[in-house]
Length: 413
Image 1 (tube, helix red, strand yellow):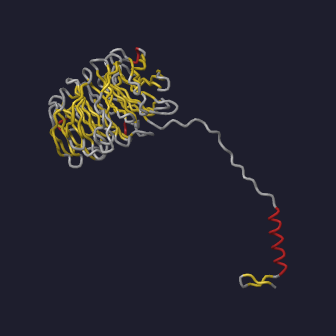
Image 2 (cartoon, rainbow, N blue to C red):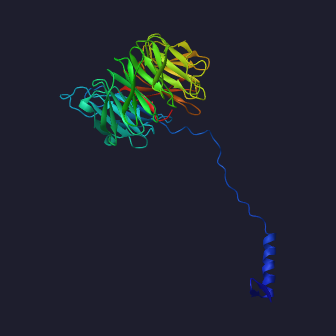
Image 3 (tube, rainbow, N blue to C red):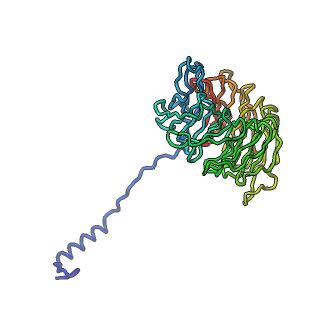
């Protein structure tokens, strides 16, 4: 008898056990084959394009159309302006549109003094899911900006900015600003926003934590638009009548300098890769490319503010930068073309002529992708959304949006 762990084991059992181990050792190894799927090109990102359009029938509400950006198919549509009898109000349409920081909620301001909000993505964009909020005194809004915890609406008819919070959004307070506020500049996580007042030639700095005014800053003549860097260090105010851009230190709420650009600038976008501001000059048929590089301490780097002007098509009223920093695209309203600007060489690459049916564009947004990025374009005299592919810089598709195109956004750049 042998012992193992204090227990007696018959000798014959040990012999049997050893024989079993011998057989196991002589057994052929088992080969497991795992099938491998063939590797193809990377899938395009999931991204939505949102189009705001106004039906030809003035008694119909505005429409928000959701499009699978890279599938180039309509996936949802909702009435965002309230349904109103023509005997009560003959024209009901949305005037401005934005997305929240997550890209999951769409906001539109409506000409009857209301704000609409609706979820996007999946099956969310439906008329039954639209929530409507009233603005103070039925204010007609010019711009809407969604911050992390609040929605800000510029009210030129009341010389104020309305602050709305909650779901559905409800007015929390109204902040008096300069005359005729037309745009709100900021970032989703910035400590303050800037209300651009066209008639007062100034901007009002508003603290987002307290919704109080920090400063009122003078800018150029006739400011109409503005953008801010993603790190919320610099804001750039586009002065249409002053043919200039005002640079604001966003952290200090101080004006730094004024940079001359072309005639009648109306729009701008930022090339984050190349640290450049691209300004669309509607009156001089050009874009101005401005160096906006900062050093590691957040100060203006050498060369900050130097500018190069590039000719584009007639009357460029909007510009959008491809996020890889290679190109900028302008919407040229007069001849219905799209200009492609090479941001490395700072030259005009070529112009893309849109078909006459696609109208005269006023809104444009570019988004990256692989193997192709896309540029979406709307025109107020066409019910077609123009889609341009960036690998060939040619028209890829035209989608029906059931109304005159007012503006277009994407859920991610």
